[in-house]
Length: 160
Image 1 (cartoon, rainbow, N blue to C red):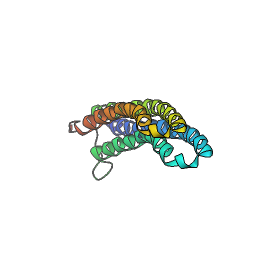
Image 2 (image 1 turned 90 degrees about the horizontal axis):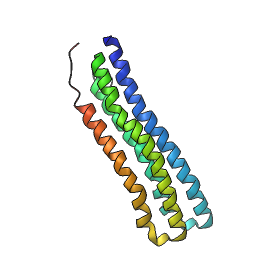
Image 3 (image 1 turned 135 degrees about the vertical axis):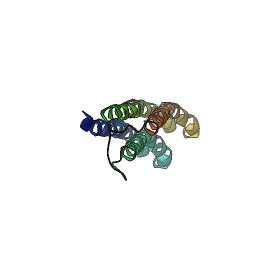
Image 4 (image 1 turned 30 degrees about the vertical axis):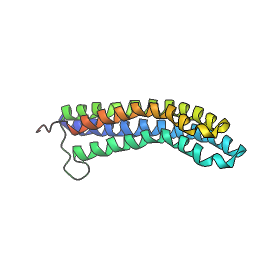
């Protein structure tokens, strides 16, 4: 059973980067479509809408960070990979918050960013307010990141 520990840990790392990355890619794409429409009408708004487009991309970065920390902790990067089945389950569980919340929050943040892009299209002077709405969603991505990082870094080393 111990030989499956590393597989579970790797699967957790993959879930973290895969789900958060898919959510970010979809979110940034959705915002890019809205931003392109605004820039077509007024190219001077490019910088403002670009900032709003980039916000849903942070979850993908967070997912990658959790995956890299997991790979370091399990010894794939810079060590010897010896992970018990129980440790593998723990790493898998530790990666889930970032993967699942990262996916979901990136999509929801994209919707808030698209709304912000609409604000900027009509009232460019309200950029600060337009940024607040998607930034509130970012809070939950950060909480998931913190949860996953703390969990990954505090899984005890169990000798095989």
